[in-house]
Length: 438
Image (cartoon, rainbow, N blue to C red):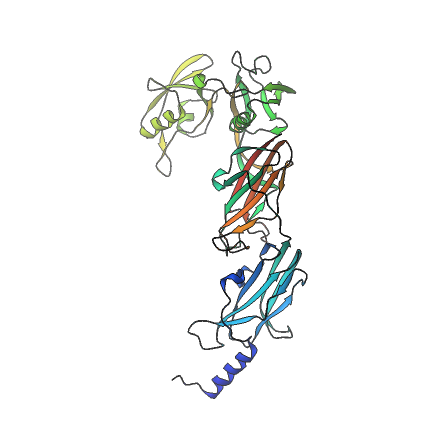
């Protein structure tokens, strides 16, 4: 039998009288669980949800006290419960459990402190913000997407409901949030019209040397960006803003299916200074025709050949200003051992606008992208889904719903961040272009 001194028993008695009554632990159905480490969290909730706090309680003779709450939003469900740690003598260490019901829409700061009843002595604090909304009836979704669909372009009809399921890890403080803008490093270049094939929609409208600036008022940053826009616009009439010899001109084109890629070629956008291609004499605007006498057709063919000839001379046949030149280049391994030549390549081929674009003056810049959703309306707050609950904080899926309200195009972005941080860094993001038809 354990033996305690009179002093020890008095200390334990004092601790027990300072703590809430010792009761069985609350059941899992009591709701969302937050701990001291999640202080500072902001959550979205729906009327009827339950918020549960499990706060570490140390043997200091103090207890947790409720400091601030909006009674119109949150109501305490019974008295706080003290749960002793397994194997610990009563009152020496454990957890205090508080349960709150979300009873009305609005915003509430939920603040508690660990100390004496007067608040003059405070050992620890916990605070969170609960933003509650009334339940919303969400129509059945027309389209359901996941993170795997990020970067896609989808088409909806007016009235359609889009559901997006995004993975979320509870207890980390991260949550999915809509982004109005995002800063990212992107390839930026002058998109130059290299050729306009006969019979294409661009014939008579565009000229070699034109620089494409915008498509339907949206800036395009590189040929990759332009090809994406062209794919979306197939079958539509679009307006291109171009720079022609220093003068800005608007051109209307009816986008069609892309022309045959039989005329595709590999165009040297840029060569990196100090790298094998530049040292050998390859230049921007060169067209790669062959390697060691073998015709060069695809970009994959180029990569595979260079990979198989690390530190071995390759004779590139190029076209430059109407002449054919043979230029020997020896790839060098980088720090990972992969062979590098220092060439930046475009696969140049006709797009749905009917012309062949190439990149010039390539650069990598920090770009701020604005996300606007004029024809998409969010339906309710995101739902938090797990096998046995739909309450915030306990789930592995955040479920967002949007309804198409009018014809047009929207770009939707969601970022996975800790929103209370001063400069939150996104651990993940989801981006989608939505075309809404009548």
